[in-house]
Each structure stands twice: as structure tokens, then as C-alpha cells.
Amino acid sequence: MNWKLIFALNLFAVVIGTVSLFGLTGHVEPLIWLVVFIIYAWLIAKYAPGKFFLHGFMVSLINGIIIGVIHAAFLRFYFLHNLEVFKNLQSLPRNLDLRIFTLCVGPIVGALLGLISGLFAWIASKIIKKSTPLPSES
Image (cartoon, rainbow, N blue to C red; front, top):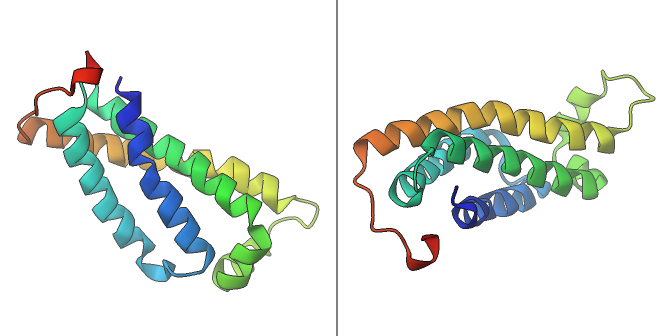
């Protein structure tokens, strides 16, 4: 496993999670993630030593954790700029702590999207020519 690659790719999650706090991703977020998954797949296929599906899965799982932590840490600010999300969560039981809920849902969504990201990475590994490994990977 190339953990440097996995954690480097999670910089996308930090950026998207932070931008989403301001409500700037809105309804285009699925399209943003589609583009990001294609970038992930290409980079994983080029630089991962193997286990392409697992690399893609782990990137997305960690994405979910990172974004969950960002949203939970700034929950009021996130809700202020993402009123639709706030309205959707109003149907949950009142005694449910939304910060804990956000921290729990992040990894679950990350794992589910990891299946897609992993599949993209595996498919890309069948199409893209592998680069020479970086010296630190040996």
C-alpha cells in the first residue's frame, strides 16, 4: 500500500470539505466528486504498487472521515450555509447529537463511495500505463 499517495489524495477532501462549509459546492458536489474520482483513479493506476481497488477504497473512506470531522467541527457554520442539509436533518430525533451523527455518517458515506472510487481505480489500472515507482516506494 502506498500510504503517501493515499494521504496526498485526501488533500482533495480537505479542500472540498472546507469549501462546502461555505455552501459553495451546492448541487454540483456530485459532479465535483466524479471528476475527483477520475483523478484519483488515474493517479492510483499510475503510482500505486498494486491493490488498486483497495487504494481507491481507502482514499474515499479517509475522505469521509476528514469531511465528517470538518463538518462536525464547524456544524453551525456548515448549516448556516447549507440550509437544505439542515432542513433534511430536522426529521431526525431531537435528542440526536448532530455532531456525533455527522462523525458517524462521514465514514459510512466514505466507505460506500469507496466502492465506486475503488472500482474506478481498478478499471483505470487496466487502461493506464504504470509509471516508474518513485524512489521512496521501494
